[in-house]
Length: 291
Length: 172
Image (cartoon, rainbow over the protein chains, first blue to last red):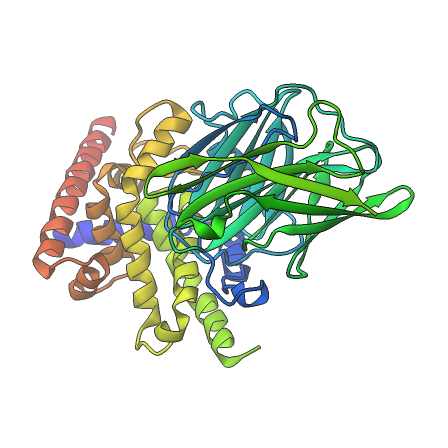
């Protein structure tokens, strides 16, 4: 019986294993797994924190309330597969991300999906209605959600963007950053320039833009594609609690360019840094100008 | 492209098929399996400067995959519970409706209900045909533990096979 059983088990396992679609294997084979930190500024390895919580302020409105929920915590990796330009989603990538992000416990629950940005194996999705927004990032080993509630409606001037950006560092001091926000009428493309010269092309659509990058370098400017041509919007975002001073940190700033605040609140200030399990709150000064 | 990178790409091309099929048999879900293989290869890439000098890099990758599959078993079940509202055992997805009294389907259904360690031992032993010593190395346990773990799993499968044969006898 044992030999017969072993033969049956072997046959059943091979039969089942044969059902793995060749396309999934091909996709895995063609993924770029190489660490990319050497191309991205400081020569250090970038790792996500064990529990990721991205903080996204509510589109530049004062009084934003951030809720950070880490749905699952995964082991670290080196953000291999990240690209400076968005990549087309692989089959099932968006569906997989949505399944992970839109659980009943998530602050996303009930919010419509506005925009999804895919870069290699990572999916960063924005959910929003008129006064709430939430962001979710799904990577190979983690899912993280953040949400915020705006105190008033957001109105972004035509040809400009309202920028919210956040930076995360883990206990090792390695970091990554997110940027998202609303686009004013006519903005069809957004390319962010970091202070080290790296250009990160954002995904744009439905009145939103989304981008992220595996470093702590802040945004210096944004090139906006508008009907009248390329417009450069510059930023000076300086957290009052710099992340590099905290062993584990998350900070956030948001800003609108174009020489004036967006209707509905102006420049938003919020941020926090935590170390050793304690969370400190503080304000962030920001300013910007367009040229 | 430098030599090290080329070596890694060759390794990925040669090992991904086996890793993906093994992962699928262990976790029972295509998306989870794909995530697991990606995590494994990311980790191998991170350490490739050392791994490439090993005699059997694929054995190292397999050890990472198995270790992660065993450690994440609880998380996968919790996530499935969140997504479905139910507590389900590990499952096989994308499968056709099983044929009545099909012995292989019955075996696989029981395999999906086994504790992850038992299922992993059986997959490594009977799908990959690894010697018990290599199964022990992959699972980071003793040879005796592998033998007893696989034996318990096989006993459950044998019981399922007998039940299937009994049903088949009754139906005919």
